[in-house]
Image (cartoon, rainbow, N blue to C red):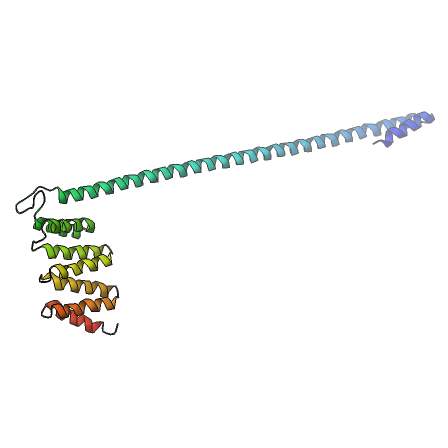
Length: 247
């Protein structure tokens, strides 16, 4: 592009340029300008396209970042609200459980007195019936409370060894095996002449056998044979001893 104006200047200075030369030179310069304008316009168009692309990319990046940030904030709010809701539900459940336990205890200890009841409480039969009912309902701790109240208020009643036996059974169903053994042994130690005494020892042996504590089971079965040789439990204990002899 710089050569044509230079050639024109040389021709003019040399004074040897003809009209045809000048016309040709003007034509060349015209087409050169056209080409130059076309190239500049294309460059400008490409620049505009590039700038638009950059702006679009930047806008998209900002939008994506903003959307992601909003989504994260919303997620954090949802998690926070969920945690609060769980806390409220757990608090409500705890309060309901406390109220149920209070009502169950009140139904045992605050029921109206009836014939044969001790001062301010229930009769031994009523305590025992309540305890059996709660055992059947699966409320073992509440059942145990009823049986313990029977023993506390009617220690000499004929239902006392039965109540102690049921206390051992309630511990077993709660999975408190050591307490179950202790409660069942107490039947034989405190009411040795009661019909429940050999039954309590046999139940303790059966629990030990079920848990594969065969040495403990043998001790209970052997004790039955020694202390209650004429009982039906002694016959059953002898059969169990033969079954677990090599275990």
